[in-house]
Image 1 (tube, rainbow, N blue to C red):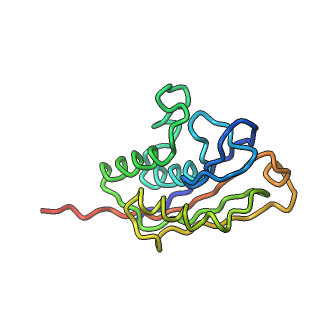
Image 2 (image 1 turned 135 degrees about the horizontal axis):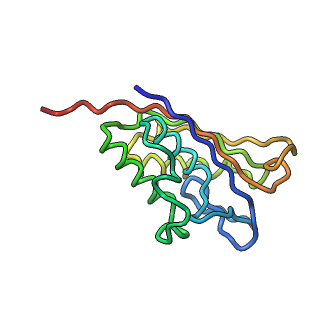
Length: 161
């Protein structure tokens, strides 16, 4: 078994969709980034890649690569799952926290959990997503950005003979 940790943060701007955990959330601001800038999925992917010692998402999905422009991070997560499988690992569980003042995420978390579990081929019970604020402190607390932290556990897949 191996443990991985991931973190991501993106600035909130006008003129972009807000996508978190593969779910589009109605909000007047969206996250700035080359892909859909889904900080939750980016933190999860970095945790998974790190646990398998496969580098980070910048290595596998470089922002200067045109094919990743505005791409859904669910597609990138699917690709990450394939990288893990090729390296001989599968996901045991993920625990993630989104840090933002607004919007409130409570009602969206079940949909995020479902999308992530489906994409990774894991039970929903192995995916934990939480949301918190920074009580008005810092970049996320001031409403200028959204951040996410993720930790995961992966295990080697037994080789079939």
